[in-house]
Length: 228
Image 1 (cartoon, rainbow, N blue to C red):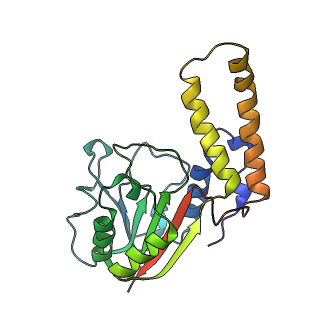
Image 2: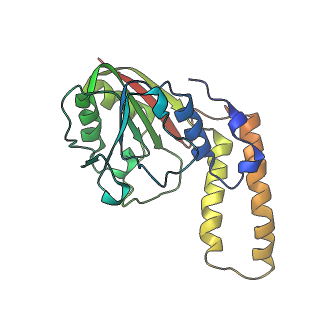
């Protein structure tokens, strides 16, 4: 899957590179049939991606948070739907928050129809973000081993951003944390001026050199796999 870096422009310098890559991947995915969005929210969504409801039969949600108004109030590891009942399952920014992500992936396999598609997105070199917990980061070899053992085939793993995207998001996260401490003095004032410039520069570099050191340094991975 090829993602256009035109979605990442200097005007987005205050949004994470990862979020814009994620929006691009989700927008570029050919959604069809019945979709189960595990961990997604009907309202108060992050980013710019919105489900293409006009192009699918249904888009239903699973969540443990009742305030998100899910169609199924249930954990990712135990969804109350029949076997082989959905054409696509989405696990976006969920696996890192699960103590046993293998169980959620096995549940997705159960839910998918034969030839159904699993879509996952998860961080790698990205700041910790408890929601309510943050347990792990996986490498491509881990996804391949776990998904293959479950029974998925045609596993494709695409890095989401390269070296400059990683630097951007780490700078953005650390500077926000530091500025919340309300630092004072000439050094703090200089950083307040220089950090936005640095973020814009890193966005431009990511746009210009999206593959630089990408196989070793990425904000995360976008994974697709087929139910055998």
